[in-house]
Image (cartoon, rainbow, N blue to C red; front, side, top):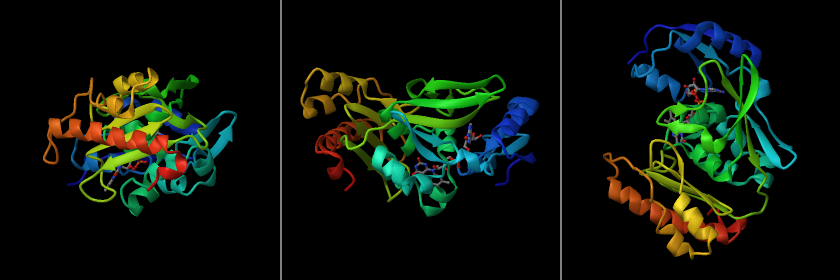
Length: 277
Ligand SMILES: Cc1cc2nc3c(=O)[nH]c(=O)nc-3n(C[C@H](O)[C@H](O)[C@H](O)COP(=O)(O)OP(=O)(O)OC[C@H]3O[C@@H](n4cnc5c(N)ncnc54)[C@H](O)[C@@H]3O)c2cc1C
């Protein structure tokens, strides 16, 4: 399969990217790592007439502490996040989860901004980000604005991003040594999750249990009122709408969500050192 014809523009700065998006409108698509966009272009599920390549904007690639938060540039590749010492010390769930994404080729090309913008409900890093909370910083013709992570993903391939905006940064709270866990159930190692669960400080997020990554709010509320892990985890699939495919039907996904949530909460309550096994 080959994509339909398109023009190619390579930009060197965020301002140039915004100008190109403004000029070409909804027919344009940003190209970061290309690992989600190119497959859907080959299937003709996306038919952009212009590709704006932002892969060369190197000042979008960083992980740094800013006050109570860790700021991560949208161009940061999964393997950079996986090996980043600041992230490991300040928000250790992220490098761990980055190391669970696809294979080394995917991790060397895929970017944080790309996986956040793509809004696939089975994405690993967005699940962890949703459990962390924080903000997605975007830039458009009118400057920058911050979107709470909880309001960013609207559905399958759907986000709060406008057509003339790009993601420049994701900001998450520093969690330090607080307990966390990521439980990912896959058919093969480093495959997309059939279901995954991220748990950080009483917040729980689920992959592949709805049209986008979602918080397990019934579980979180039960934990907040002092329920046991077992009771809270039994509510993990409440208000979800899992799909069915060749790997799992809806009831099996619901079972996985409850089981993996219990495991994640048990690991997270054991402290950070007990979580990455
Ligand atoms: C074989 C394979 C296995 C994979 N396995 C997994 C897996 O196990 N878990 C997982 O979570 N993911 C997996 N992925 C997806 C991978 O993580 C992708 O890299 C990621 O989803 C998209 O990042 P990208 O930089 O390649 O984005 P691209 O493909 O370049 O772009 C994706 C979308 O985001 C938009 N976009 C990109 N950057 C920005 C930005 N800064 N601002 C606004 N919009 C932007 C693009 O226009 C496009 O619509 C896999 C991919 C492949 C090919």
